Length: 337
Image 1 (cartoon, rainbow, N blue to C red):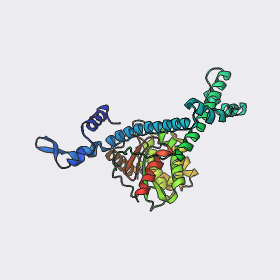
Image 2 (image 1 turned 90 degrees about the vertical axis):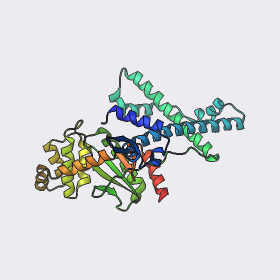
Image 3 (image 1 turned 60 degrees about the vertical axis):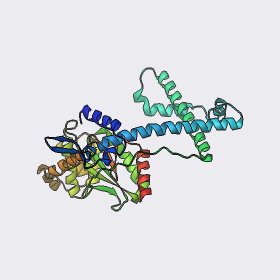
Image 4 (image 1 turned 180 degrees about the vertical axis):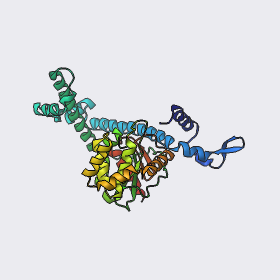
């Protein structure tokens, strides 16, 4: 993890330099140390990913507010067209069209979530009822707004931030999807990172939705300070790859994380259908130690500070991202083809 002052410096640079200012000065020294120049290109390369994340966050906040204002204006216009107040319109189109939560719905939710119960059961069930009712109201409200948007002419002029790309090599990395896919997602992951485990289902949804248009490549990024046993698990996965079983072994590591004792790693190999003597010899020899370290160094150079970190055709996405975040970037990349 990089120190806090690094992010502070990135924020200051973002505030002091207008978009594209550093790029315009490439090649010109920004500072000199005993006659040795520090160029704008060096600075931009070092902080580009951090600045891009800040720009994306600013854009997301503006976009969210803009969408809210559009929705509010559409509802107000519809209320005026009907000659009623906004509350009356919402009563007619949302509240009156949402049924009450049933006892069976409360019971079903309770049975799935009762381990999280705090306090008395009756109070917990009332919380469930309120939560489910609000969900129904929100879903109906969203459907009503969608119907208004479908009939309106909406022009969005909010400019997105400039596309920032990082050069991340995926050559030789294990991948899922079509080899010739127009969109490559490189994922730096740690087999013992709970956030990496959580995002696996979303990655599966991405592959399912986009088929041969996307491939997802794996890169090793075990974080020793947090997960001391993870590095050996990454070496074990590469031993599995030697036998053409990387992805089955990869999935078993996440399914059973953070269990990674020598006995565990051997049991996963057996479950994945590996030839055990060859696997054990590979793991004992530390054959892939250098390859795992190289992936880590590649990640550091690319600006990776935590896992999971994705690069969609070089465009960084950090953390547990929802399907919509991947879809937005993938659609933009496909449109550029």
